[in-house]
Length: 289
Ligand SMILES: [Zn+2]
Image (cartoon, rainbow, N blue to C red; front, side, top):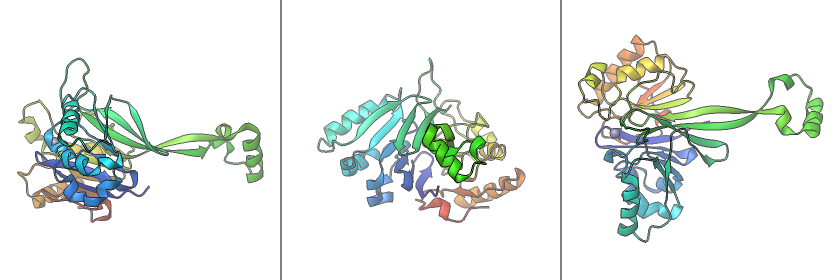
């Protein structure tokens, strides 16, 4: 499936990604409405990864202008900021009534349109006690029906007869494809979490692993180095990197990406979001490698 992805992602300041064909927004940092403008009207479902302000402050203006489109906002179930926000918005813009807020749990799946669902995956950005869920990654699944292998040799007439006699479910099986994954903010912990994703959008706040280790363990992040090593161990078709720290220049990031692509022998196209700029139709642009 072709995906038109627009986004902005610079650590501390703002992160948001809009997947146009799916009507899905991942995170909603500042600049969401000024970056997407009337395209915001196509947003149907908003999945927020966690309650850090750079991932949600764009909701204020979005809600005021676009709640008429009846969007749904999904958020990690134990992140208390969201019920407060919902209440604040209700008081601040009482005319903006159409938005629905829904807490979601890890492993919960939300149907967003025909054949497309989004699964919430627990990540390790916010360390919590007692299994509380305050930070999520998301996987988008496409479900298609496919002929069961035992029937692929049948002639069309035989197949038609069999379908009429036994029904579609007898001859068809479901094929689920992970068409997109979004890491949100998280350290790299599990090398197989995004295996077989067609497109992976992953954060890379720091360039080197050494830099992540100097940070406090609370609300931890990934380094480009760790992400590239993980990707080299997975089957992924296209990689989008974002959430770089503004301590780096975009040129410096690109050089490091090229170096790591070589080091880990990465053959897939790698895209990155520049520091401080909106990117339109990312997958249609030039990869860094
Ligand atoms: Zn962040």
